[in-house]
Image (tube, rainbow, N blue to C red; front, side):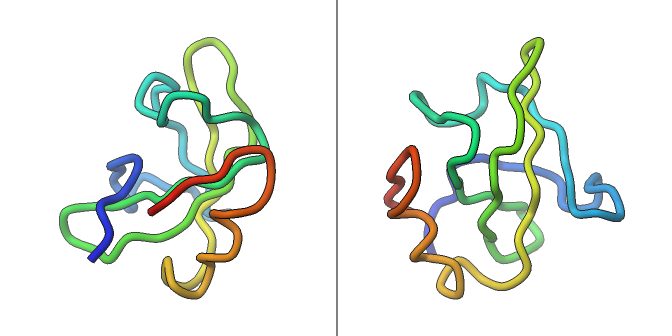
Length: 83
């Protein structure tokens, strides 16, 4: 299993799949519109889209599916991640 870029509590996501995390928890160099892997101790990792970073907080949108389902997103866009 891949090690997530950011540990989150999936239960804290809102109904639209958005979750707010401390921006300093993101991998160095992460930019808006990039993708990161997120995980929870009780769930399989997933991919999240970085929607906004403001005032020390980052808003992420958790994508449906597994990391494998969304792996192509991790290697495209503003930032390449190796999850």
